[in-house]
Image (tube, rainbow, N blue to C red; front, side, top):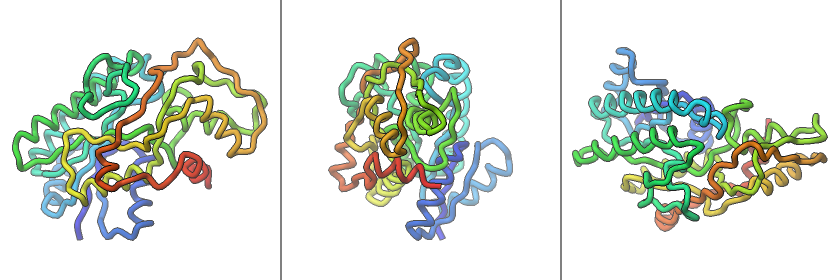
Length: 293
């Protein structure tokens, strides 16, 4: 039986990955690691490498706009050290195929659509500048390793992920998770950050996991591959959709003292679309699935 090594400190990602494999009746054994640091973990991965299908690296500090603004230098120091240790360790352990999960904030903030050849170009988002730099660092480290043709290390850039098991935190939750939790029947008024006019693209977590398996199966290889839906929404539209899905009355109030971040983030996912992959869940279907107990 082939195995998949997943280096991740994200419960949301890990639980959904397990569910995806179970629901699709895939006969792979999953091995999860928080880091590649302890000798026992290094030795175990070395043994697993002979029957490894692929490896995923999805680690690091990140959060909401406010969290990234407050903690930028700490995020930079922690993530760059973490990415270097993990990615180089996996390379030294002869892990040949690796997917590094990046983020759309690694793209320039002045583009209407984020094309893969613009990855890492300035100007980066001010509100997530340090976090963006760490993702660019991880990707460039993968590119350096790929100079040895034995290795295929790919950076996969998802649209904003959402789905079951995403934990809400006042400071470091992403926008959709935050809205789902703030818009609830206990309140008659909902105080939301920013103007609500910025546009964002969202992808259901299991659709993103499906794309990872598709990239592997089709043997796609590019240094950066975008995975999105091709559709974006204003945060105001998103809030209204969540109210409607939850069947909640109440007034939305916007705290304009909080920054919006980039006005628009829409990935150009034409490469993977042309190869035959498309997301299965619409935004509304994904939100309904997320809300199921």
